[in-house]
Amino acid sequence: AKFQIAMANGVLYTNNWRLVDEQQKGEEPQNLYEFRPFAMIWKDVPEPGDDGAETTASKEPMTLMSESGLVQFSSTFDPVSRKSGRVIGGKLEGRVTASGPDGLTLRGRDFFFHEKSLELHSDSPVEFTYQQHRGTAEDGFKADLIPSAEAPRPDDFLAVAGIRRVMLRGLVEMDLANQNNPLHVTCDELFQFSPEQLIASFQGNVNVQRFIPNAEPDLLTGEDFLLVFED
Image 1 (tube, one colour):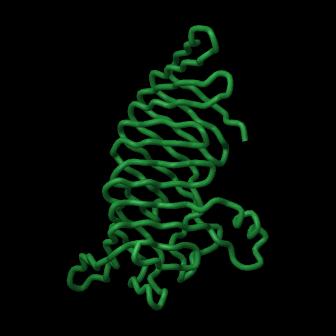
Image 2 (cartoon, one colour; image 1 turned 30 degrees about the vertical axis):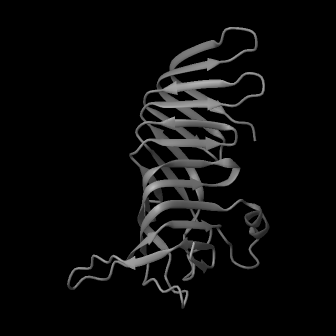
Image 3 (cartoon, one colour; image 1 turned 60 degrees about the vertical axis):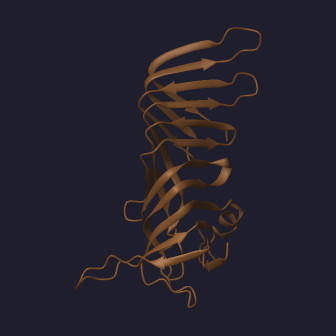
């Protein structure tokens, strides 16, 4: 990337940007900018002396990457003075990858972010990974986000600490790694996963295949299936 724009809790990478403000007469500026390409890496950084500083510092950073990004800031974007304000909304266009700790990734197209509702979502097909597990969903996803522990600072890029819950919609197929008995799970409606609680659930015409060495797979069917991951 030609430009690296550093703020208190992250860095934005891009080759170029332009103002795309759709301000109407008499309205406040929307502070909307387009970046091509768009990449961002950030951590939730506590205030100096915070008891959680050591724990936060040990966490893997979170990243967002896309072919382009239409981003709304809380104030005018000014990378020279580092007073751009934080990202409060936007659309990541084209191919998008979002990632977090423990191999958590979401890959798809056209992701939307809203700070007010603390959501990241897409209606396009998506690929999902967590640790050695992986899957797909036909009708997109919604991720509920965790707000930053501290009140946003003027030089923060994002007031987001992580992902609270991931929901994959529509036909979902999931391959769950296990040293002895891997699982292949499908459902027709919804898959939900909580990285905090390490609990996953499948809903709607659930089919579970458990693969056993030198034997036919076990098959379990039902409308709901709950799975608890080992920490």
